[in-house]
Figure 1 (spheres, rainbow, N blue to C red):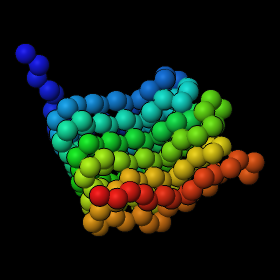
Figure 2: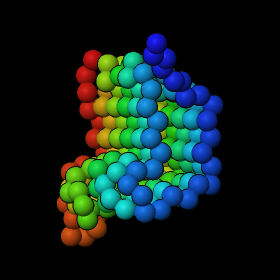
Figure 3: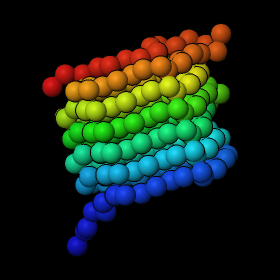
Length: 171
């Protein structure tokens, strides 16, 4: 018999991860709730995910990533996906670097709620550096109470950036 694992009330604080392919990866068929990342440093050696949170059927809720330094060499730095909804997401006071030595595309912050919406999202006071041909912040199907404020989004002078912020989708 198969039983899906529910990630709930988890905290990742003051971790230092350096030189690996991927940082934190949580995947479940059911909901994830109350995940907190604070003052973590994740520096990847390639294009993997620094923080990768995915639910297949239910919601991803009450997630905060704060005061952290996250970087990779392409692809996604912060990736959150729910086949249903994203609710109560806070990404605040972080340093997010999507480099470009391995991959020439990618996202600093990527949030996707495939058939639901992203509600009560705060992306505030982050420093986001996007390498060659990338996006600073991408959100698929934004919903109610989405606030993107006080962020600094930049690219290296010789690099091309698709969009600093792109909100996309329809129901």
